[in-house]
Image (cartoon, rainbow, N blue to C red; front, top):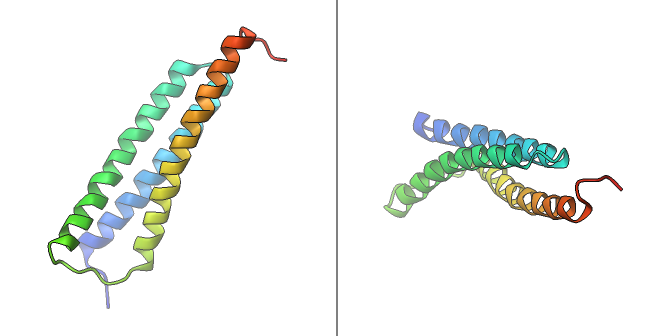
Length: 113
């Protein structure tokens, strides 16, 4: 059975926004590795904006299903949710790494050892 167009659009919104957010997280980490912590925070903020789009879309799908609107099993939806969860984990880990880099920079005075 074919997936309806709204469902397909939601799935691709999740995949594309989660992918953009993941890329922005790694961009933030690259900035932090160079000591550009303001740019790192800016990239993380952009990543969160992308994740907010996925969250709105995903929450809407969950609410629709909770109200009785059933979805057929979709491997594509599982794939989208996998992207979303991995990106959320990546964002949390990158934030921690940036904090470690920030503290290391403070301790060493920005000098490489």
